[in-house]
Length: 103
Image (cartoon, rainbow, N blue to C red; front, top):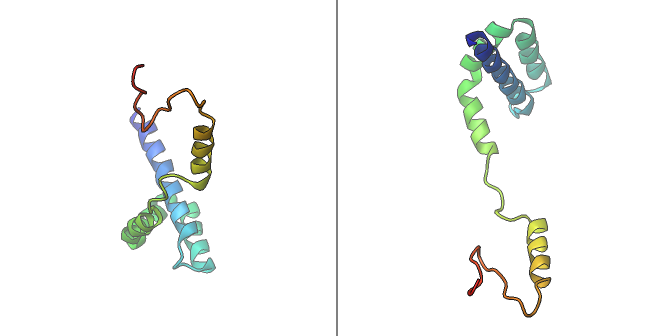
């Protein structure tokens, strides 16, 4: 069971490193190819060297990529507006997650 956990953790680490290498703006094509080759040829040592050499910047690059987006996309706001227009005239609408009075 421990070996399974370590194997899954290893696979997750390799995917994270490969995605960081491919999305890195400060590496050129030769640098990316070199890191990928090192990760593929000597996986354990290559991952360890990568984490030592670029691990701190890896976290900062990930934090700058995860900026919060809009709360409601334009498509969603249009859909909400269409649904509100379809409410029957004699029937009270539900506002902000509260049930209509009397129900």
